[in-house]
Structures are given as structure tokens and as C-alpha cells.
Image 1 (tube, one colour):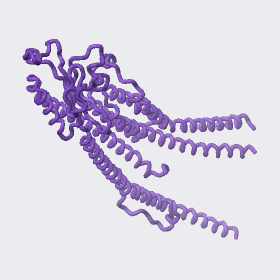
Image 2: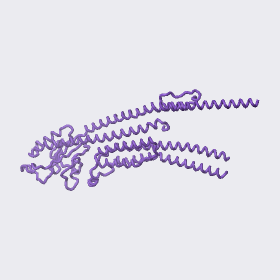
Image 3: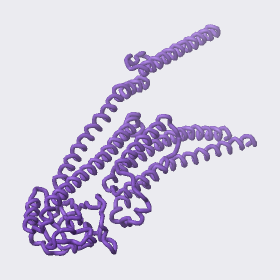
Length: 284
Length: 174
């Protein structure tokens, strides 16, 4: 296969184009996926902030019924997998799912270990550490955000019925989980479109290069090979038609060379015949 | 047999042995690209399973290493690297340069794996680095293989001529 010039010319071109397009598409897909996940996380953080701000008034007045209603209503929102509030000790105080209220959360799980990995829990958490992705028991991919509820001057100077000491920095935690299904669907669609686009680009590029090479190089080269290998050439004087550029010129030069060779052969033959006849005449 | 004839024959035999040795060396050289691809593929297997094999970096190590570069920056660098490396290989193919497959590409690619790993985005970018490595090393491998094969054909033709000459010399002696 690699003895022919066609595969030897097309293979590096095909490999280069295919490889580079694949590298660009894979890198682009990874960057776009990262951007979309970051957008989704930002969206989740905005929702968490909205919930914290919406519940602030009810928290200050220790209006637990109102607080429970806000959490339950926002939790009904499409795409929200769960929404809950823990207190300082890790007990769930409010949740969309009423059955988990009063349960304590394991501090060693991924969402809590960011702050609770050391002997003393961290009071501030970096934004990227507030976000985590996991699969829940139903197999749904969830993007979860934990938003700390910090102590404010108004909390520590509030009325005696609802008071938090100033030394307590974090009052609790709002934990929200968003269904990643729609994002995964968008990513799958994007992946599919990129594969189709890449394949179309590759077929067009490699096919185009192969067609051009075939038309302007391989076909004339085949003709040249056929013309120069022909045994009839010496007698018929046929040559390759013009229109193939340098290859036609090469064929014509080859033809001229063969014509000159034939004429020399003829002259030699004539000379030999003449000398034989001369010898014959002299002996007789 | 005269001394001159003996020395001529031994010189031809030496040339034949040198040609055979050269052909053997060229055969070995033609597969060097394949070895590079195999080495890169072997290095990529543990990288692919990195989340299962390597333990997560401790906060102390992360602090020591400092802030990793952003994944977008590494990806841009990867595309620029792939583009330049492919151009260099194509240049070598055009000039029929006999330069060997550079194993340094494997270390550059492993560096890319490491950067993505430290930035925490290796699973998303693994295939991009793999495609880069396979493209560059396949092109280099193809270049070295085709160049070696062309040289082998040349050497084999010379060998045939030499063997004919050795046969002729022996015939003349008898």
C-alpha cells in the first residue's frame, strides 16, 4: 500500500488535519463544559443568596412558620432537588422534605468536610469550595451549594427571645441541591453537534485535498507511467496530451529522447547493413 | 589467486557486511516511532485512572505548589504547542530531515497532564492531551518510518549490485 505515492501523500495530510481538529474540538468542549458548570454554580449561589436574603427578616423575628413556608415554597421550584437549613450543631431545622427535619448531618461528607476537616471548623469558606457535584440515591447528578449564614450585629443585639452571642461567627448553613439533568442534556447535545461538525469538516478537508491531488497529480502521473512503460512507444510515437503542466513536459522530453534513440538505432542498422554489403562485394 | 584479487574480494565482503549492518540499523530505527507511541500510551493509562490511583492532594501540598494556572490558559497553551509541533514535523517531512523521533514530546505531554491534574480538571481534558500526543507522535513515527524505508530500499539496491559484482569476481577467478 505504501509503495504508491497516493497513500504516502494523503496519509500525513489526513493525520494532521484529523489530529488538529480533534485536539481543538476536545479542548473547546472541555472549556465550554467548564464554563457551563461554572455558570450553573453561579446560578445556584444566586438562588442560595436569594433564599438567605428572603428569610433574613423571618430569622431576625424568629418566625419559624414563615421561614418554613419560604423554604418549602422555594424548594418546590423546578430543578431544585433539595433545600434545607442546618443549625450550628448540624441539625436540620428547615427543609423542603419534612421527614429529614431534626436529623443531624454527617460532618465527614463532602459538603461539610471543607470547613470541618480540622480540629476547629473554618469560619470562612472559599467560593469554589462551597460547590460540589454528586449523584443522589435516585441516580440524579446534583450540583450542591452550601451558603453559610453568618452572625450579624442585628442578630447579636436582637431581643432576648432570639439572641446569638457575638462570639458565634456562623449561625447555620443553607444547603441547596440543583438537578444537573438539563445541563447534562445541553452538554450531550453540544457534544453531538461538535462530533457532526468535526466529521463534516474532516470529510470535506481530507476529501478536498485528496480530490485536488488526484486531479492534478495522481491521474497525470498514472498516465505518465503508462506512457513510459508502453512497449509500443518506440514504434507508434504516441505521447501524453498537454494540459498536465510539468508532467506533460516530462512526457514530451521522454518521447523526444526515445525518438532520437530510435533514429540512432536505425542509423546504426543502416551502417551495419552497408558495411556488410561492402564486405560481401569485396569478397565476391 | 593473486594478493590483489584477495584483497579486492575481502573489501567487497566488508562492504557487503557494512550494508547488511546498515539495513539492520535502519529496520530498528524505523520502529522507534512505534516505541514512542507505546511509551506515551503506557504513560497515559495511569493518568486516565488518576482519580482511582493517586490520592487527592493534601492542603499542605497545594499550599506549597501555589495557585495553579487556569484550565483555559493550559488549554490555549496545549493548542499552541500542538500547532507548533505539527508544523515542525511537517517541515521535517518536507525537507526529508533524518532527525529522530524526539522522546521529549512525551515529557512535555506528561507536564500537560500534571498541570491539568493540579488544576483539578484532568478528566475533562485528558482526551485532548491524548489526541495531541497521538497526532504528533504518529506523524513523527510515519516520517521516520517512510524515511527509513526509502533508505532501506536504496541500500538493498546497492547490495544487489554488490552481490552481482562479487559473483562476477568469483566467476572470473574460476
